[in-house]
View 1 (cartoon, rainbow, N blue to C red):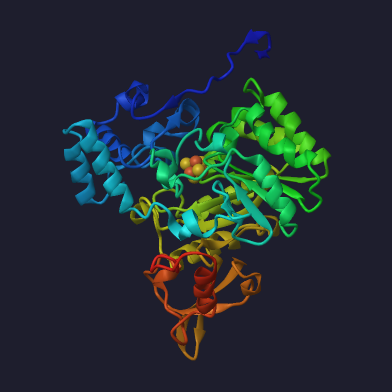
View 2 (view 1 turned 120 degrees about the horizontal axis):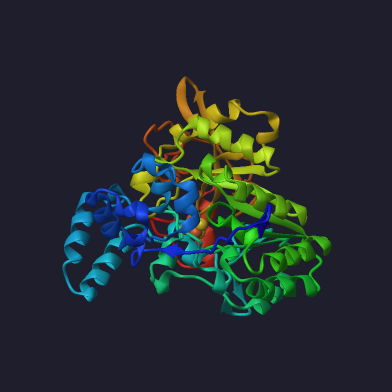
Length: 452
Ligand code: SF4
């Protein structure tokens, strides 16, 4: 690459984790207690960052409060005091004790929320297709075996068990042939969503192994290929400057040329992620091959619980040609006590931000909870017979008939998840009996965790 005759070196990806983070010059200057917290919490929750995040996204003058620092570096309060002290003590013990303590703590952090591990794995010809999830009629999720890591890890990630070596809790598949057979047998599926980890971590040759068979098989019902990724934020060079970027764009072009909609489900948590020349160039490159970029993020205390940040994000996304898509409520897993905010507060922030943007940004939906029965949107606080109520609806449901039916819960300012809400009238929400029947008929018996 040459700029006005001067050679500029290509940025080369360099990952940092617990083994080498002390080499980061900015980290060396941090007070010792921050480094100690990284060490202790980083032994329980996943930790990985990279040179782009460090040099372009984190404002080191604002550390420890900088949102991108909080997003990618473990913080003391991400563990409650008991487990923090337990882990601190374990670090003085042999390796086996460290591992056992970390795993014990991890299991208390609800590693697989919303029944992901069992309830959505499809059964096909008597075989469970691990590495796939079919929860909503039209969409199947596929977890490519080579895409189960990311360019950096988000400290709130609900897929965190996949990154900390808890292999029993990992789902991934290398079997694109099984995916094709399943799609052929299920013409109601129109969308395949590649997810991870981050599928964009894969070299193009691996990605081709999954995408090309979809294009070359006879799958008239497959209309849309979606790729869930945070690479635009964590390593935007992936789309224009990595060794195989050109080939990658060619592959994406082949999807749109084949008449399939290519949707990049881009994950942005903070406006700063949209501010660098590299992300802007990457967005342009993707749009140039006909991809649509839809954006999503959870609302996170200590990172983006601020209406201004959301309004800025949505506006900037529209300016860059992206489509604001979802504001999620952070899942009840990992360090939820650190990131979680109440449903009522999330709705107030959503509303506040939504009121500040033009109609073009109002494609966004939220705040939305990905629960076991479906995607539930908090519509707001209303009054019924003189009593406050929380109004919700399904944006997606295990039963498509549940979608768009308003339903009500007793007002609760503290609740952070659906299972903490009580129906406004009666003992159960309208979908609960059917959900229980679903578990009985399809899979194992429901647990108290299932109604999340
Ligand atoms: S990029 Fe996505 S999958 Fe990877 S750590 Fe962040 S939230 Fe999790």
